Image 1 (tube, helix red, strand yellow):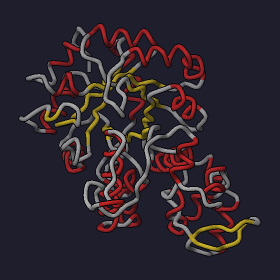
Image 2 (cartoon, one colour):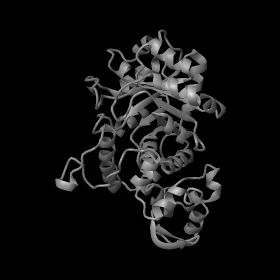
Image 3 (cartoon, one colour):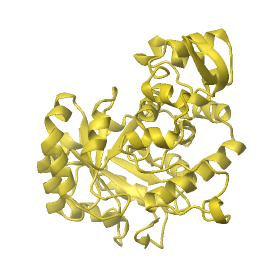
Amino acid sequence: MESLLAAAHLHPATFSPASLSSSSCSRSPSVARGVRSGGRTVRCAYTKDAILYALEHDAMFNSDEVIQWESGKTINTIAAAQGISIRRRCRPRYPSEGSGDDKAVPRDILEQIIWDKEVEVSQRKAKKPLRSVMESSEHAPPVRDFIGALTAAYNRNGVPALIAEIKKASPSRGVLRENFNPVEIAQAYEENGAACISILTDEKHFQGSFENLETVRNSGVKCPLLCKEFVIDAWQIYYARSKGADAILLIAAVLPDLDMKYMLRVCKSLGMTALIEVHDERELDRVLKLDGVELIGINNRSLETFVLDTSNTRMLMEKRGDIIRDRGIMVVGESGLFTPDDVAYVQNAGVSSVLVGESLIKAEDPGRAIAGLFGKELMR
């Protein structure tokens, strides 16, 4: 929400009616206070007539969420009404610091990650403001067709296309690979048939980095790259693009509907693919109500408890598979995939691509492990 209401002054055209259906450049709005627009008081920081006109006539600005926010409801209250349990702290330091009321206790792992991410993004934005990151994104290497690469691999091999993941560690498993060279791993994945590559960029909990993403992109690896990040602000999307990302992860368990709509618009303006991740039926229904969704990931791992249940994919596809197919949305199976039987299970459920990390990255030869995962060598 605050990402949406954070930079209208950077590019008012983003909020024109035409921008809803075109690929015109998206910029995130920042907010002016006490200005009248359309009969209601608007909290935004800039009062240029062109901006107010654009905002007044933009469907997102007139959404229920913005009106509720303008009436005094908190971001957390609005999110909770959509089934989002993750609370936002919006504090300038890590929640483990401080004492008394200022020292918070997260409900689960995901909430801890998001609270830490708020601090990280705030600090990064202070060093490199949105305008600067947007300018850097314009000079990034050309965007590559992420969905096109997945479709071609699926047609070529007859099994779900592979998004092979590069990650050094996870909160639940600790360090997964001591001998960690992102470029060597990416090259091995590509040589053994991966269609795309996912790169963890979270530092605090996964020991990843945007530098890993940039290094792999500049190494000559041709596979499209997914920035696997816990996105809470559009700034991260522009930053990922500036580092060479072709796609980015958006998590429905974290982002209210309006944030997802806005971030989809930003991705479209940059030519990037958004992989929207869901974990349950309510999240899937929220995502299916959005326009412009092309790629949905069904995660078999609860991000709150990190418990795995591969039947989650089948259950959701049985309930909503017809809608997904009618809209031409590609589905990615995520987590809990270790054997050819696991891959066949989600393929039979209707999945045409899979995102796999742990079973590959822990292998002595991550590239050769791909053949073991699928029960055959994949054609490139």
